[in-house]
Structures are given as C-alpha cells and as structure tokens.
Length: 229
Ligand SMILES: Cc1cc2nc3c(=O)[nH]c(=O)nc-3n(C[C@H](O)[C@H](O)[C@H](O)COP(=O)(O)OP(=O)(O)OC[C@H]3O[C@@H](n4cnc5c(N)ncnc54)[C@H](O)[C@@H]3O)c2cc1C
Image (cartoon, rainbow, N blue to C red; front, top):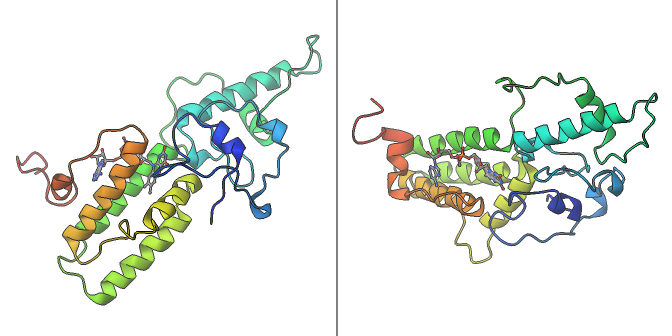
C-alpha cells in the first residue's frame, strides 16, 4: 500500500494527497522512507509531489509545477558555476533533476506535445478509458464478468501511476461501510458508480460536478442533439 510522507504533503499546492478524505500524513514506513536527504526537498516549488523514493513524481505533478521546478533547478545550476564570485545558493532540487534541467533548452515557448504525461493528461486519458469500459460493459453482467471487473478495479487502484491518486482511490473504494464498492450488476450501475468516483475527484480538486444522468450520452451514445454524429 502506498505511503506518504510529510515532505510530499508540504510540496503540494493542489489537493492531490487526500482525494476523498483527510489524508493521514506521516505514515511513512521504512520501506518507503525517501532515499534523498530531507533538506534537498525543503524548497521544492508548490505543487511538486514526491514519489515514494523521495524524488519528484512527474506523473503526480502538473506540467506547470514541473516546469517551475526544472527552471528553478536550471537557475540554481547556472548560479553555482565555479567561476562565480557570489556565494553558492543552497539548492532544494535533487541533483538528478538539476542535471536534467541543465540540458533543457531555456527558450521554452510552447511545450512540445510529445512529452511524458503530467497528472492531468494521465487523468484525462485514464478517465476516457474507464468510462469507455463502462460504456462497453454488458447491460446485465454475468457473475464472471462482475468478478473480472471487480478484480480489474482492485488492481487498477493499486497500480495507477500517480501513486498519491491511487492511494486515495483505494481508500475511497474500501470505505468501511462498503458504500463506495464498485457497483457492477450492469452498464448503468457501473457507469453511475464511475461517475460518482470521478465526481469525488472533481470535488476534491474544486471542479464542477458532472451530472451523472448524462454519463451515457457523454461516453456511449453521444449527445441527444446529435452534435457528436
Ligand atoms: C483514479 C484517478 C484519481 C485521480 N486523482 C487525482 C488527484 O488526487 N489529484 C489530481 O490532481 N488529479 C487526479 N486525477 C486526475 C483528475 O481527475 C483529472 O483527470 C485531471 O485533473 C484533468 O482534469 P480535466 O478537467 O481535464 O477533466 P477530467 O476530470 O479528466 O475529465 C475528463 C472529461 O470527463 C468528463 N467528466 C467529468 N466528470 C465526470 C464524471 N463525474 N463522470 C463522467 N464524466 C465526467 C468531462 O467531459 C471531462 O471533460 C485522478 C485521475 C484518476 C483517473
């Protein structure tokens, strides 16, 4: 199970850590103790989320925050050139990032479209996949189909690449009353459950909730006015 640590919490500006409920910080176990020195992260820009190894997690961070961090790293690199007379500033960016950033062109007008995904691009693609799963789910699912989907959702919630998102998603699904368990009897059931799950994330991120009566038009049939035909 994914664990968090206080540095990751401090580094965030968006509410990634506790998607569905207040997050239990400082639960790091020895297996997830960051390998980097804590002082190396103290000044990470807001919004940068750390991975379980203590390094910045690109898939958990927005592209904007990532760019701020690499820019900062690149600046601190150039300021720490040997010929410099000023005192060397203490950098908060892990060495690996600073090195990578020093090779990044500084004329960053429009970001390329073929870069690794950030937390938002990963999320959009994943929701497309998940809602499409619901759209193609049988109207009435057999016991076997329900078992398969249940296993898939369990595994999905463990391996989702934004680990802080995955951690919260697992917790939400495992809510003790059982009310957030995947509803899998058929397409409508599953589609509405996914819509509810997505709305939990929307609420946490301060986004507008989606009207779940419309999930099927959005993800399966297209809008009633024919605008998708
Ligand atoms: C399991 C999971 C957990 C996530 N956790 C986090 C997190 O903790 N922190 C974080 O920063 N990001 C998280 N994300 C990503 C986040 O949900 C968004 O994908 C991301 O912020 C981009 O948002 P967006 O506004 O482009 O639209 P998205 O939220 O990606 O939605 C894509 C489209 O889906 C439709 N839609 C919106 N809501 C619903 C709904 N309820 N039902 C059906 N359709 C809908 C809309 O047409 C929307 O344009 C998570 C993603 C997933 C899959």
